[in-house]
Amino acid sequence: MPFVRVSRDKRGYETIYLVHTSQRRGRPAATRVLYAFRTPPGIMVGRDPFDAEVRRTLEAQNPGV
Image (cartoon, rainbow, N blue to C red; front, side):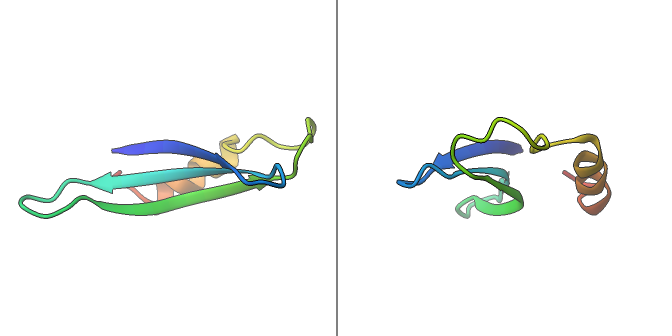
């Protein structure tokens, strides 16, 4: 199941990850980063991390997710 993870480093940069975790029988879950978006600190203008074009591309590249 995909989920969003947000992290901020000590300089203030935010990185937004779209991560998919697959459940495997009897094995530890495998995680895979599908998308990463990094923003500089304090910036309120620019594009959204998951705009329409990015969503279409992610859906086309990962049809089973």
